[in-house]
Length: 433
Image (cartoon, rainbow, N blue to C red; front, side):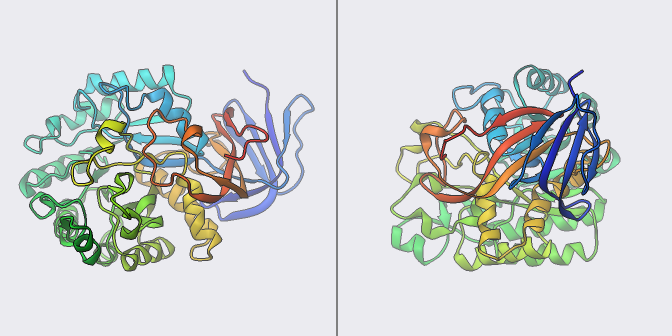
């Protein structure tokens, strides 16, 4: 058993309780023993940390992370993804099933759970495939996957095109009280598109992806979710019309929710610039008007979750002509600092941003973390909200380097990350990155 831990003089911000005050957090046996705004009463044997000038918040929960393990470890392993997560303040992440082999079998879920315990410093939460092989043709054994340890069902980068299959999947998931996280994309409308459809795509001579490629399947998903009563989470939305669809659906059901990639929240189609493939993403970066609608969606709570969409790709598939390069960017290490741009600009309150990164993901997934409550897991972060730094490739803990924020100047840095009361990351002293 480790010594009790006392964090003193921190600005404690907990969206679940609404607390925002200087106080003390005490940890015993990997769980939160107390959260007070007074002084610590713990015995002198406790390890004490003076966090004056720092914010203490729940550890972030990232609902959309891809790795290469198993099958493509050269892109990312559970260990390197975990190190990147800890550096970014992410104490739990949902691992998408797009691996080799696909996570569509209970034995593979069990393997990932055991492998993560052996090699990862943060909580790795496997998502099991909705369809076998991610082919969208036959649903998987939901009961066995849940029993093995899956926290939700998702087809990762893939979108199920068959409405009948999706209805069946939703019905089975509802029976097992499991959330379904689905990427809404109409394959025919996406076609050979590689960026947002519009004037800028025409100027670059690139094929565009219309907003309707997202809104049409999203509308279908929401209708099926209301029909079946499933706990439905739209994996990521990117258009103003999608926010309107989600707002209307939430008037009818509390079981629907949605997320957004930090890329679509902080960047727009102009960042593609001169065919920069690190900005080739799915969904694509949209117009500035769409991005502003996303920010408003987060501010009002229509958008529930902000995630990194961490998708490591090697240089061979990114150093290609834009139209031929693979989608995806890493994001675990820059997620929080990029989200703080909205706070520093005055667009969204700190509590709201934190809620989308902690409390809401925990509620959607049914986790006991994501809050600073007595008895909850002692997963938390210490943050210098004004710490200036510049994103540099050489400092990434991730095995891949395909960041959409390479060279970006950010304010706000995770100084330390704790999982079950154990420090899994500490920002190196004197390091500006």
